Amino acid sequence: MALRPTDRFVAQNRRARHDYFIDETLEAGIVLEGTEVKSLRSGQGSIQEAFARETDGELWLVNAFVPPYQMAGPRFNHEPRRPRKLLLRRKELHKVMGLTKREGVTLVPLSIYFNNQGRAKIEIGLARGKKKADKREAEKDRDWQRDKGRILRERNRG
Picture 1 (tube, helix red, strand yellow):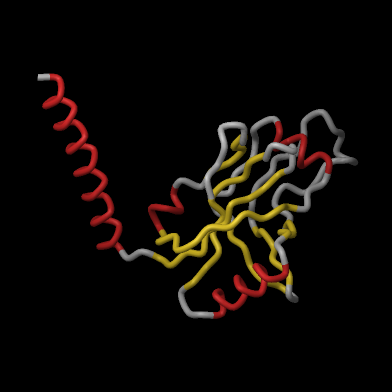
Picture 2 (tube, one colour; picture 1 turned 90 degrees about the vertical axis):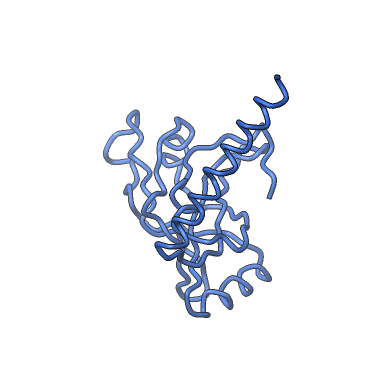
């Protein structure tokens, strides 16, 4: 999924790509309360420890942190770590649930952002866990790509 510059990131899980192999990504809507939307629009929120799970044929975002909105009183505010329902098309939902039934596949939230219409969306990755050796290999590749770019830039200047 290619994000447009008009998309506004609220929260990103940068660690997810380090800890998991992301096989596929998909976009889902999130069911939010009013104070949650206001809190997210102010740039707050975290999905570092969050994950998605299937319960009773529906997909839920669990353990995502959306802090209480400061301008709302305690009576009107939301619970910061409540489960939030994710909205997918039925075909996508069945596909995702079938893949998560397989061993080792998990649903990891990658980012929360607002699209062009102002709706909160979440990018979810179908992920398999990396072993320590895989993480080291990815780090070596990343370092080599950075060094290679530096060498090419220096060569083109001279």
